[in-house]
Length: 373
Image (cartoon, rainbow, N blue to C red; front, side, top):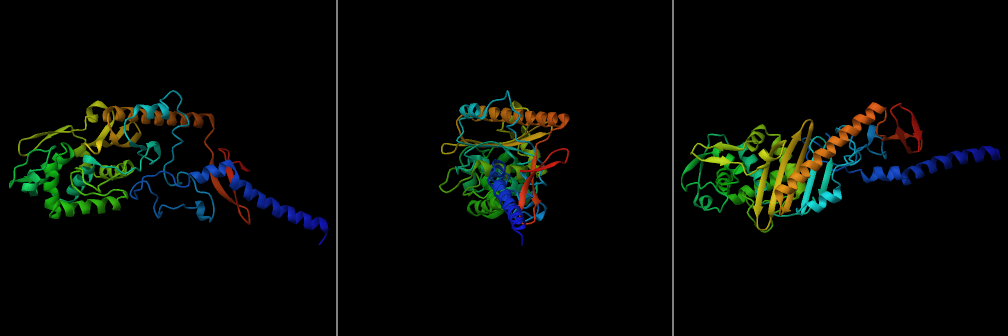
């Protein structure tokens, strides 16, 4: 073979290899690799794409290619921090928060807007009653009678002072759990459903794991402090997101007050319902060990958010700051996306391109023109 021909072939092979190497070492490639596992809620029912086990899924089924972020079948929102100009910065927000653990998520995509130690395990306090209430809703009929044992009646506050040996409608006790955070009602429901609170707490842990809250361990139906009981801020938004898809649960936690069949008026502990615009529902908690805890959902216009915090000293101030920060971020993101659309510019996405012996990255513009990096 002529020397020139050999050199030409060698040059082609070297170019392909260099192209693949440059693509993998480039900042663009590095950025895409760092986002291969987007912070989606670990919940198959809404955010996780079907037929996805949580691992990278190659676009168009091409092995070794770069995945889109977020996955192509999940609604995509531009980076919520790109367009925010006059809003509170993350550093400023962090200085205003007293919570030890926080997560704020876009409720439509599962994209994290803000986080601070979201996977740090801690005592849940009464936020764990989200599980107690949801399991009771799924298991009992409203008119089912629930007897009250000595143990249930003797639970410490918060409580609705159920009378030992009397029976109450499940409907009233579920409302007492979700609105008034009643420990006596929680234990009575647990004993009705599982025979004992201990067995019921195992059911709670099993349900939490099945619904994607993999770092949650329940030891009580109430959230009262027990060694070994724990949850995380991320797990709480997973559980609350699941619960809010149940229409009955969402209706109950959205009420500010309700009158029971036995004459009590139950008032919701979640004062965000009347103090923070867009509050859809939430669950508060407090113990000495857990400090103040909260999980909730908020919606304004087409934007919705899920929020959870643990270990707060000024919970309501933290919630207000986080909610305002989140909606400002999403509004600015939507404005930026609209401006880009009007100007004919959109954020580029990375897709795999076949090059015989390998793949390269290609940036596609609105005009469908491609330039190989």
